[in-house]
Length: 157
Image 1 (cartoon, helix red, strand yellow):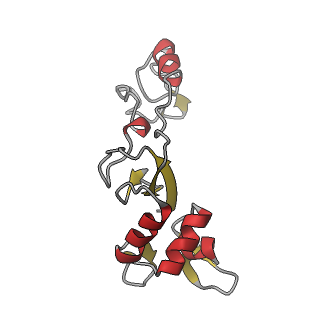
Image 2 (tube, one colour):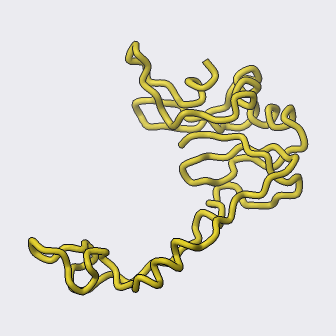
């Protein structure tokens, strides 16, 4: 679960924790009943689905591939997003300082621990440095010294 600062419209009203709809656009084609969706029947490629695992025609596949992206709109607002679920974690703020204030008072960073990851707040300095960088390298990083750190720590070091 990486983190990323996005610039969105000031009135952007997408629910926190919900994947942006533009990343959910797509069609799930019916599974092939001959190969049970794996594209292979026995040792050979499935003749019904030609190895695709579904029953879509070439025309339907081309249509789906040609569907336009629905990118997150850009604007003057500041918002924290998580990158695995591609969803907002914070409200939209008018300034980066307001976002930093929120990040210093709300849990948003992953805390690596042996009992499982949890969310923790950051210091104001850490939040400022992260907003300046804008993105983390992923959920967790193992350093050369064998230390397990969160991606935000790796990005702001």
